[in-house]
Image (cartoon, rainbow, N blue to C red; front, side):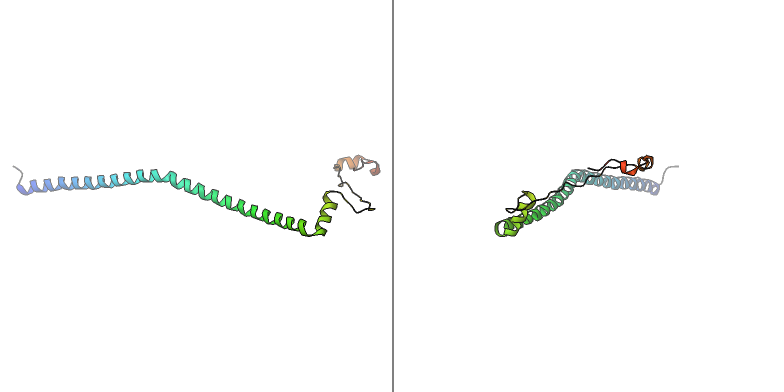
Length: 133
């Protein structure tokens, strides 16, 4: 009862199929490992690029705001150089200046003293409430 030649060939073929299957899976796993290793090198670079793009957007917005400020200041400088009415208005508003013989009235901002409803109800005479400065 020995094994026939065909049976031996079939056993060898099956064992070869197992090794071929094993080699194919090994190649696939090596490829996946190399791909993961390659990606692990590039992930920090990709993150850095994202951070730099966000910073670039932020700086672009800041630049646009500064450009607007610069235009406004240039406009004011031009008005200060060439417009006497603007100079007069600035002198009156910010420097408290006036024309000769002119009386300047300045009013302090209206102050508000908060009072609760309970205090108002308890007061018999509403005229005795504290005066607002």
